[in-house]
Length: 157
Image (cartoon, rainbow, N blue to C red; front, side):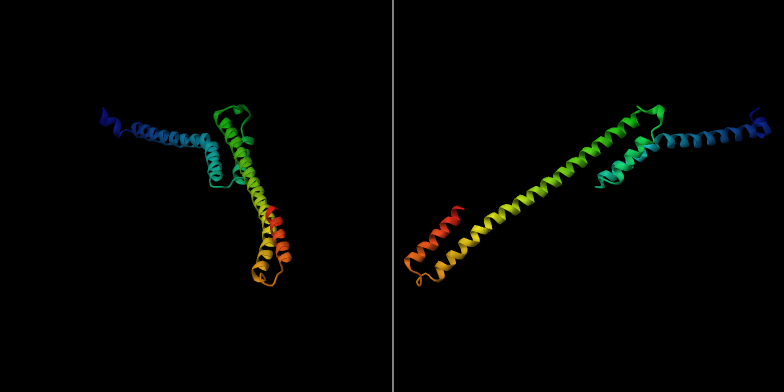
């Protein structure tokens, strides 16, 4: 009976139909899988772009686009919640990064101001000390005391 089925037209057509049905089910499964994982793939790409240091431009735009492309009925599915959490994290990291930049700018400005405030009296002191060293024997006692008083005032300052 098996030999008759193998050689018969119905057996060949049935086998071909089963193979065609299995192949089309496999292709349909791949398409459905691709549709289901498309949002996750976009989210993964956005997170990868963000982790590569592209903070402000493409990563946030991609994450926001994912949220806006969300279907109405799936407003609270896991992918949407994950996208919202990643978007909130990205915004917080961006704000903290901007805060660090501002803090660094203020630190540099403070160091610059302190350096300037220290250099001015030190430069003046150095000038008077150099004068005392170079012209020590040519100066009178009053002139020496005058220069040393100026150096002391600048030292206090």
